[in-house]
Image 1 (spheres, rainbow, N blue to C red):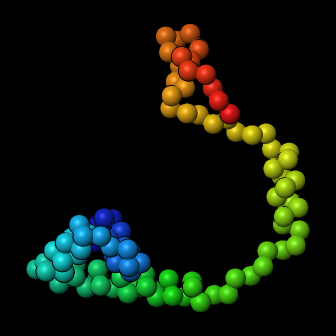
Image 2: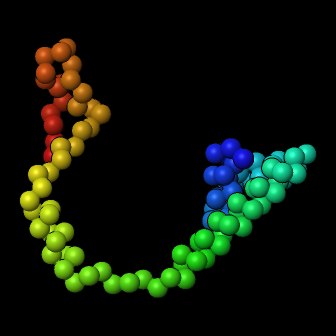
Length: 102
């Protein structure tokens, strides 16, 4: 199976398949390649089983000190500048034609 067919199998397993994808699944399952059909069906089945297993695991509360460590890390790390596509440099002069906003 190729990557798009694997993605399609995951979409089927998640139950979030649209009309176009339904046609692609029908084409795949109607193909003359029994190995491809079996691999697709197995991928859907394994994905559903993995999702069911993940959903059955009870959530564990985070360690009590995690919140404090995260807030401390945020306070000490400098913010990363946000680059917007509309703030590209022009004319090689190092200046943008648009103001930078934070």
